[in-house]
Amino acid sequence: MSWIAPSISGCLLVLIATGCASTPPRVGEKGASVPSSAEEKAYQETLDHYTDHAEVYDLLNLHMFTAVTYQSWPFREARVHRLATFQVQPQAIVEKNLAIERSAFDSFHEFFFGVHIPYYRYDDFDRRNSMWRIALVTDAGETTPTSVERLGRADLNMRAIYPYMDDFWVAYRIRFPRSTTNGEPVIPAGTKRIMVRIASTLGKAELYFPAE
Picture (cartoon, rainbow, N blue to C red):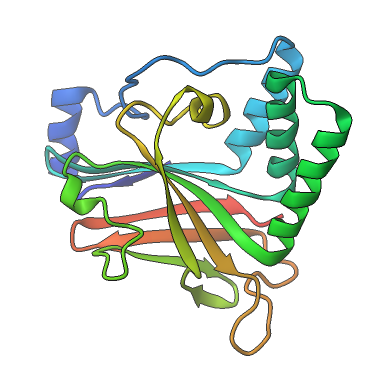
């Protein structure tokens, strides 16, 4: 969990005013869960393993709540099977969707980016001249995205997969290249942890993920 604040006194003010909660306040109907409690638990554990959260404050002024999920292969598999359970998909469709996910996994390092920003003018992550700079930081250095795609506002379907996507949150898909301009892997073999940084004049969020 990343906590961004300009000073200890600022956090103390937030503590007094809001209790300095470890998660954003929940707004909206809870997403669906699968009938099997064991499968639900396994999915939530996989989601948590590949997800990090951050908040950007300036004293009492909230600039951003965010959560990011790394689209690792284990998470992609879990996501495909979860949707298949909800939709009662035949095995042929499940295999087709897994093949689509494998192709995407082999082509990009991808992240699902959920964000709530109180002021609409700051929500410009997908624009060419965005105020935000996004970078993937690994042992090989820093890499900027090949694309940032706005997926839209949260709904119950999205919340069933990413339960942190409350009302008023917006989803993006961020894709980074798998290789540097020199042809080297963006995530070198043996890397244990990677980081996505989202930064602007409002502050920065640094979110960490296992590299496997």
